[in-house]
Amino acid sequence: MQAKDIIIEVGGEPIYYFAYGMLTDPQMMPGAQFIGPAVLQNYAYEFARFANVYERGGSNVDGVLWELPTDYIRELDAVEGYPRFYGRKTVPVISGGKRYVAWVYYMTPAARESLDGDLPSMNYVRSILNGFRHAGITPQQVSDAYYDLMDEHQPRSGK
Image (cartoon, one colour):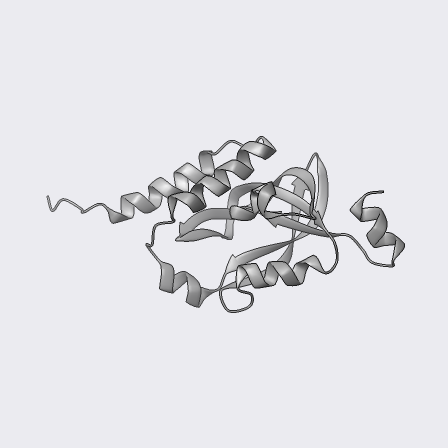
């Protein structure tokens, strides 16, 4: 019996979660069922010490779709610092050609401003890369976001 069957058996609906940061790593998600790689459309990916997504038409974010037990969202809220550090909302994502409605966390404006320009730790980035590797997702968006942030730290020549 899968987690989904147990949830439905006790009267709940399955909960889906779109992860794009360290929670893409299966070691960080015990009790969650891996659905597969997923795409969040019309959002962009960035680092502000931690991974973040924000609305931007025409952009896509790669991530991992998890199916969760109904009470798992409270645990995620604690990990993500909801509601002060990260907010959350439901969004449509595509995985395996199928549309799901999933929870996604995004940095609050205050958190985003306070961390603007801060580099992520290498352990944090490795955790994300491990999750992407497990899901078969190219690490391109992670490296692009990291190097974009690194470029912001480079002194500009005054020509």
